[in-house]
Amino acid sequence: MNPAIIAHRMHNQRLSHSDFKKPVEVVKWLGALQGQDYYGAKWSIGVRLPGSTDAQIEKRIDDHAIVRTWAMRGTLHMVAADDVGWMVSLLAPRILSQTARRYQQLELDEKTLQHSDDLLAKTLQNGIRLTRKELYTLLEENGISTMGQRGIHLLQHASLKGLLCQSIAESNNPTFFHVDGLGTASSMPHEEALAELAKRFFQSRGPATIKDFSRWAGLTLTDCRAGLAAIEPAMVSEEIDSSIYWRPDVPEPADVPRVVMLPGFDEYILGYKDRSAVIDPAYETLIVPGMNGMFFPTIVIDGEVVGTWKRQMKKDTIKITLSPFEAFSKEDLKDIEQAAQQYGDFYEKSVDLQL
Image (cartoon, rainbow, N blue to C red; front, top):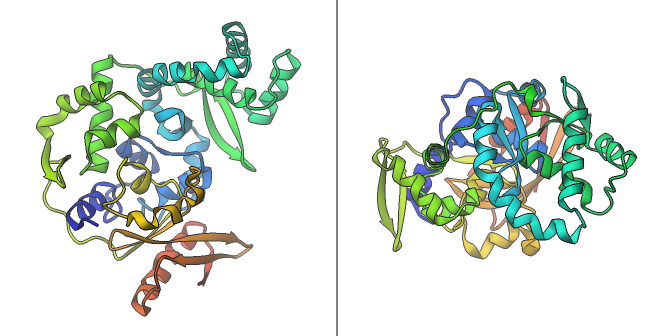
């Protein structure tokens, strides 16, 4: 663990304080946040916006102030509506190139991909919003098979081409709409986009290394160095354990919060290639069992990941079961109870905490 890195990261990730007033401000500050777990992504916003509720954030997704699309590394992320255009334009070419082999395996040639793109774009114009299931039916009815993983790759392709975005999920079935409905999806020159992405990353995740940035963005080290060079005057660097870390040039942060309950896939964990500053490597497999890419929600005490948790939603309560890496003290449990109730307040429910 590294207390200096932890203090700055908790501060810059806005987990130790928050001056945000709206959910979209959280998303813009982070640049993008991991979004394959729809419900967890909403809590990633909520934990950085004290007093907010799931219903409030859902409304901002429903009215398209915040959208979900394939961005960094070809993974679903939450993105502010007016960042979609330049961000997808910057990131999509590399993702599409890396996915070409998979398209071949799925027998998705250029003619099929273009046919699908055109059909999806035409159908979703003029404010129409359809679920993934409905779009699969549309494709099938027009002679385009969605069997296996073809369907999701067709929707991803249209999104990476800047045609579609996702809105709210209905019973875990995401809805899609045409990006023209945003009215704000603009682009920007490549160098400017690299600088903007670098700014968002290092301002919200510093101290971080250039390899952290490259891994998070899914861009080459050459592009990432160019982006960092453009914002370097606003950053400070320091050598820690033989690596150079960059962070915003801001005053030293105050103390970190005692306990934070984070969702799985939160940027405090996934925003970095090297996570050893905040979690003992011996425990990392406990938050990603089988190292299969599925991250459990985590319990963070004094900035260090010390356990996992899971929830069970009931009518008026949320049952939260804790799985500590090592036994919690009475003081730990008291503080965890308060943090867990903040999660309950987010859903406007009481909490039943279990070990």
